[in-house]
Image (cartoon, rainbow, N blue to C red; front, side, top):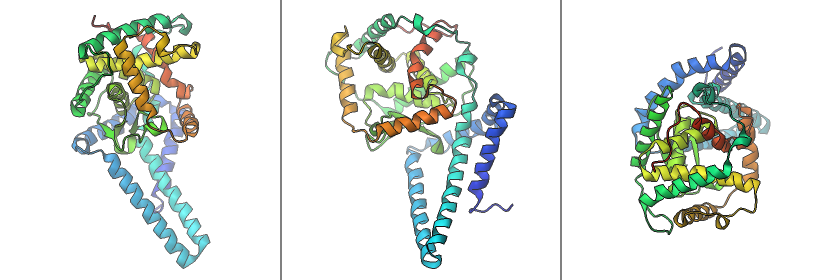
Length: 366
């Protein structure tokens, strides 16, 4: 078969499907091993040492190309309609659209998503199994509240909401250094230097209940520029973990938190603790809806920060949150995460399992 621009999407899409089918016979571990070695790792290194060095988010260029292709698609449909009528225009349009989808389907998996076959980090680290009911949630909540207040005291003695000027580049470099050290200590292969970009306009992601996103088509992670700055380090570390080939949301939350706690920077540590604290608070509130920020004993400065984070998040209206949750939940379950959106909440049990493993280190600097 001759490969042309009119059928390349169908061919690439078919190749991608064949590899998925092959994984069912030879095992996902086998597919991941060769994919990581021959495809993902070289792409990661090549990209991060070329376009990754450019101080410009490539997502904007990607969106421009998509927009240009859309304009070209509409124009061609108009030409088809004028010359050959509605039926021909519709037929050619469907064929062209499916061909384009095939290309995107191929790029999505070959640039990143075959990492869904990556062996479980839990198994790799040999994290011990624990009974979830045995977790002292209130005790953990009190401990993390105290640790967060301790770290905040190094930043300011003021009990008003924290105000700081953060250099994005320095923060990104620091997070990357800590995460690479962490992953190396776990004998995880780390290739390249993943870039995380601030995404504008503000609210682009927050309006769909998302703080950050890793986009395989541009090999870069993104954090909404409108996100409260206290949340930046934890979210940066989460998206960076995606960039290094981890796909499970709970695992990336876990890596993000431990990355922050590996830092000696009090702001980064505070961000990680606040991120973890909010998951603990959410779980406690789920079990006891009467709990509020005013009903718990909490450092006044930290409480002011949490209220500032909430106010900032509420300032961006959400669009179709119900539809977004259904679609993303389905996507996660389709890719081997049976907990779906609830996988984010697995951070709590992951930290408890890690605490009882040989990889644990003291989280507190007190």
